[in-house]
Image 1 (cartoon, rainbow, N blue to C red):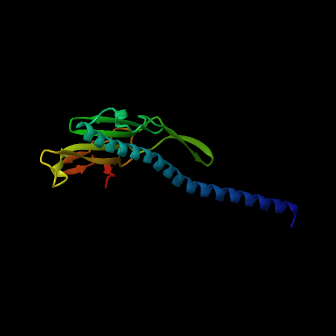
Image 2 (cartoon, one colour; image 1 turned 135 degrees about the vertical axis):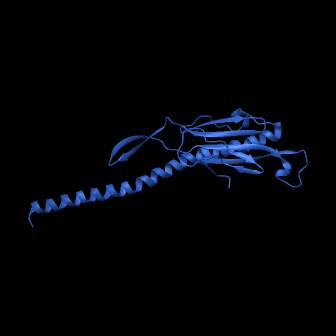
Image 3 (cartoon, one colour; image 1 turned 180 degrees about the vertical axis):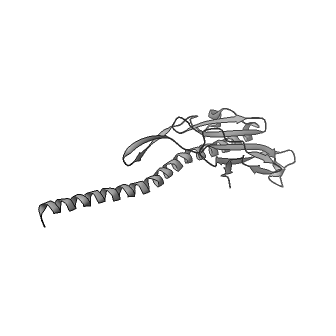
Length: 183
């Protein structure tokens, strides 16, 4: 076998190896990127769930909810790299929000070419409702009030406030386009 034909077969082997490597990366990358998004979303789930629990504790101490996140004593920032957090309190209800930021981009590589795309993250809403304790516990005192909470996630990525959950006839429900994470 001549030197020239041996060099050509080595070149084909390298090209075939690069193509195989590219296909493997193209197969694995979407799975990796998806799990990275879920890790970012877990921050929002954790924060909004913590805000719900802190609102319940605040209500026990003060017989009211608060619009002031620092008063919840959680030490969370109202804005992180991927989410904005807020709360909206009324007399008998408070809604806690974890809204995906619309100004966050991620870089994806397609065949080693960097492409900048908007980050696609889901948003979250928590609702805490003041209810008669007898609706939750049969042995409760007649005039005693307590709270119930729900945590909802948008069904698809969103950068706007999700619809508010409801509490009607003893049933908590997420708004349209969201699903209950409390179950």
